[in-house]
Every structure is written in structure tokens, then in C-alpha cells.
Image (cartoon, rainbow, N blue to C red; front, side, top):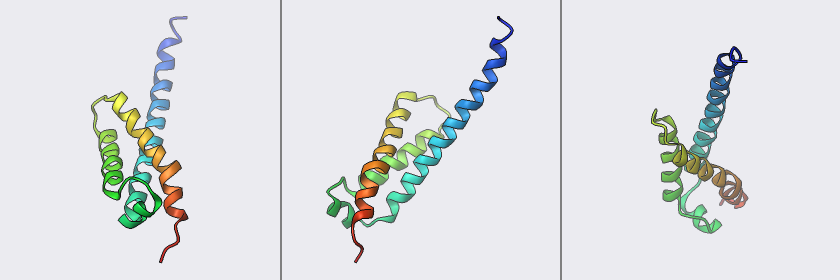
Length: 98
């Protein structure tokens, strides 16, 4: 059985790398999307202001790119990006542009 442990480690590393890459893409997409809408759109949608969302999402991308293992903060920043994509983005997209 001990012979199987080293064979699993590279597979686990590749899976972790793939998950990390997908989460990085999600964070970059959320950050780029937050820059598209005007500050008035955030106010009209009743969400946090544009500056706050851009700072949070930009910080999440930056933390993800750092080689320091800050897992709990990185998890929190992933949740921030997912909240933006699930709640704020649809509210902003639902507003009619003038």
C-alpha cells in the first residue's frame, strides 16, 4: 500500500493547480466586470459602491497571485467574487442603460 501514496501526490497537485487556475479566472472575470459599470449603476441597484467592489475584487486577484499560502483569506476573497457574480452582476445587468 505504501507504493500508492507517491503516485497519488502528483495527481493531487495537478487537481489543486487546476482548481486554483479556475478560481483565478473567476476572480479576474469578476474584477474586470466590476470595472464596466458606472458608479451610478451600483447606487441604482442598491449595492455597495463601485469603489468598494473594485477594491475587494482587485485585492482578491492580488492575493490569489501571491505565492504566500493565505488560505482562509483567499477563501473569503473567493466568496466575495462569487457573491459579486451571483448577486451584484445580475442586478447591474438588469438596469436599463440610458
